[in-house]
Amino acid sequence: MNPVPSGLPGEASHEKVIELDAVCKNYGRFRALDGIDLDVRRGERIIICGPSGSGKSTLIRCINRIETHDEGRIIVNGQILTEQLKDIATVRRDVGMVFQSFNLFPHLTILENCMLAPVQARGITKAEAREIAMHFLSKVHIPDQVHKYPGQLSGGQQQRVAIARALCMKPQIMLFDEPTSALDPEMVKEVLDTMVQLAAEGMTMLCVTHEMGFAREVADRVVFMDKGTVVECAAPSTFFTAPQSERAQDFLNQIIH
Amino acid sequence: MNGLDFGIVYESLPYLMQGLRFSLLLTVCAFATGMALGIGLALVQHLEIPVAAQLARGYVALIRSVPLILVLFWFFFLVPLVVGALVNGGRPVPIGGVWTAFITFSMFEAAYYSEIIRVGLRSLGRGQYEAAKALSLSTYKTYRYVILPQVVRIASPIILSQTIILFQDTSLVYVLSLTDLVGAASKIAQLNGRLVEMYLTVAAIYLAICCAASQLVAWLRRSHQAAINR
Image (cartoon, rainbow over all chains, first blue to last red; front, side):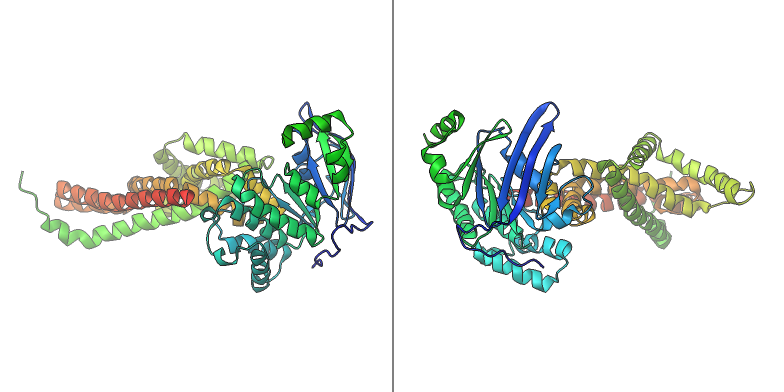
């Protein structure tokens, strides 16, 4: 089993865990990604933002190959993602993902949601999986609701369970695809708090979000995308105070009001 | 015409129950085998497995456009000829009414169940598939633990309705001279001439069983709704 990634906040190592090299993706004639270059080092926390349709979600969905890219090269944990890669499961085991719409399994209890993949994909025993699941569910403050079904929890609780479910696989990288966009406003904070905690523990994170306060707090770099390209990539202090491009300025003006 | 005499029905109840037992056994077997085959047929179509998907589609279309009674006849008369031609030097190999009934009903129901499952598979959001992928579950395990349990649950009212129809359709084995509930009743009726009493009784039995099953369907539908709204 892989060790839980170590490292202190703000201390990303020099080891590259994700490399994207001129990555392109087309949906028919629409070019969703148009030559993306991005390296992510271990322990780094990257916030991806940009207008809708800019390719943010597509980008992170290519990293665990839920979407396949058409051109360019993606390397995750030393493995090149190609058609020939037979065992995409080994890559996915190390990459956790949290979705906008939670995507918990509604027919399984909270605990079963968290135990399914560790038992079935990692092959650990049920007892061990239960212990790991309880550990992460306590961490996201759901320990007393583990026998309920997802439909019985609030949106914020469901999303925290989804984070715990991903963590139960002991991933080295976590991808977040607009994790708070489907939540009622009063539930956004509880989910962001969980993510801040995760960031503080040194998890490598790529997060698509419009929560700029969160970005300021945890990001090592902010990636601003538009029309399938990376327009700007800078430390949050630089990005928020002195965005270089006009498009980033417009975008910030619109979302910060 | 004399008055109705249900005393005679009472005497023949053991024989009727024997017929009913055959009807129920045929229903249960055709349900189990038909569901297993039907899930397979639905999955090869859903996963777009080359060749197999086209074959499955053709099979379902064929079965669904032919009356069950015709399939029973085909199987009873044609399959012995085909099997004979293949393995017995042209001499027919009789497979008998009972085997004909079990095999035909299973194959027939498989087509209907597969359509139900296929619709269920499409009704599930792609988020479920993506979440399973992201958790690195294999395709087999994704369907086994995530997709099919939900599909069967969603489709259970329709599956049960189809099974009630199957139970009623088993009376068609009458044409193969098998003794199901209807077959038993008609045999007794021909002996004692009490057709009205026998057929009324059989109707009552069908009514009781199907009503109970319908109640079960309604209950399932309500509890499924409750589970969604929870």
